[in-house]
Image 1 (cartoon, one colour):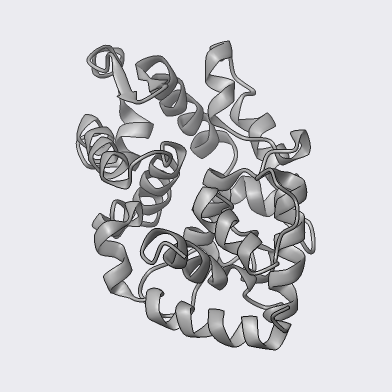
Image 2 (tube, helix red, strand yellow; image 1 turned 90 degrees about the vertical axis):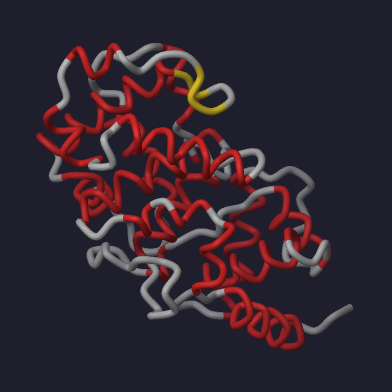
Length: 255
């Protein structure tokens, strides 16, 4: 059995290896890195994270397609779009995320920025001390407080329904972590990196199991709690930095 301090030393080395600007070149986080306005960064990041499943190259291409639909000014488009602009959005956007879903996301984001002090405002209002998982549940309730297509609900995960909520946790990592490494943005000052949860997917999950950080077989909320607990032991102030190590080991090294 590998000792916990050995696992920590190994993962700390991998964090250093992957948590740097080179990581951006092949990762969907490159999309929000195209912008400088806070609202543009967070909206582009949220939409990119929403479609972040499948091949990374396809995620990046389709995220760029979304930005093009919005005239590469996401916040301005969200706040000032008209019906004709929405009508031009049609067909598939990314796999099961289609134009119906995208149009609702645009309307919901406008409601959020007009009436809830933006995306950060919702998470700040509903934040709990040690975890953001119940906060994600509250966020989903606000996101669907206006009339919505039933099919679109599946695109926002709910940890209280045992989802690992990988995509929203990744979005939150991007917004909250602030370590000056040049990858994550750290533009949400109202939340702490200590509250974050790891974006648990097939890659990070497989590596975490091999290292004994998760015992549970499914990548669900219970597995995420296991992983969070172990990562917090290694670094309680910034547990999600280990996402770089787990993901990098899985994707780039076939660990």
